[in-house]
Length: 108
Length: 115
Image 1: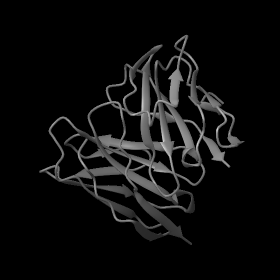
Image 2: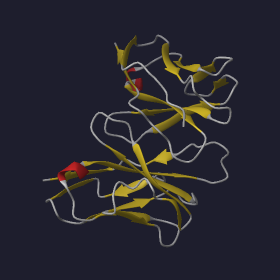
Image 3: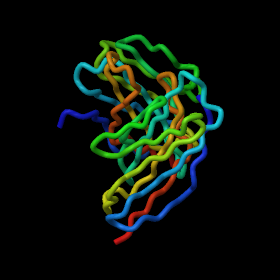
């Protein structure tokens, strides 16, 4: 799997959009970009994934650059319950390589 | 609750003892995964089953670690002769094989403390 680089931590005010960046400059053509999050003391939770096109679901939007070397996860209206560690993963197989992720703190 | 369940949630053991953890995947998920997570790190992949077949075990951390899924349903992860460095959260995940994507559903984990 391609290595991903994420900021260690970010803050976001409640109700505002949280934009979490991820760099995956060595991603190969068959690797998807996955985002998972892990709330304290819980198992990771799948958020969204994409290959080339931007994706949106009920939780978030995923914007992938045209050259696929980076992506941004967008939580449109962050709530306190979105405080978690967010992992960006470039993956083509069964083993997810989580890295250290970005610790997002949503503040009142 | 029909999610992935793990038992026990917490285990404290003395160095040198053997421990076994159980994972019950979501019903009809035929793929099952084990991960380990140490403090401040993301989960680290250990092994993977498709039904009862263990298709990847090269990333098990040492020969003290073994996993089984005898009937293709629940799975067990055993650590023999535990060491203090084995202290971690052990996570289980499952997924249905018909999914084209790799969305894995994780359980709450078993936290192991080796004294």
